[in-house]
Image 1 (tube, rainbow, N blue to C red):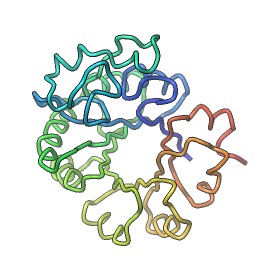
Image 2 (cartoon, rainbow, N blue to C red):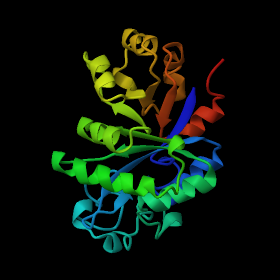
Image 3 (cartoon, one colour):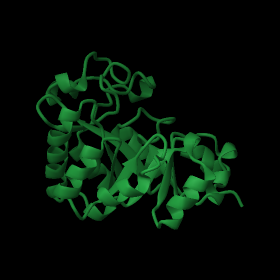
Image 4 (cartoon, rainbow, N blue to C red):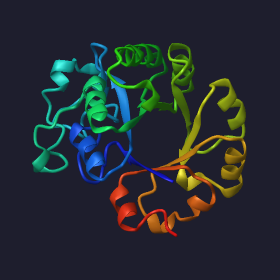
Length: 243
């Protein structure tokens, strides 16, 4: 069972920041999950929400901010004053740090409109092609199947994960069409039969975002391969996986 930090370690540092990546390494985790979308000038940046309102001292949509303007915002004080002036990182900045810290990265391609998919995938692909981070340590996931198809065309050798809330009845068809490596779902909606079917088909099964280890021990029995959590420290304290 692999523990993966969700948006860094979202319970210990402001999410999707470089400080969060350092927390991942402090805990000894090998994997982190992040969210990527584009600024108005087309730079891939690491932030989850459609707006900057919740996680910075700014206002408005991410897509309405130029990179220079976005990186002037304080993305840390909302979490704790100790992180004052933490900035919204570019994908390039984050990957450089993760390479230094030896952290593998699950990049969630984040779109809020279907029209964003093409530019996002091309811009992210350009960053990957710079060679600043080993392709073998990357995994792309998205709720947007257009993004997964585009990444299949742009980066055919990179792993892709089908990201869903509930595993749909046609999951096998989707996994085949998109040539996905793994299937990612909300742990609350996972059932034993569906988990067993995914595992029998040979796919890694990842679950987000269980934050209470005492309530999800059954996921081990069901064959779940990775838990993406805000609170990996609780799993470590609990000696996860339980014997």
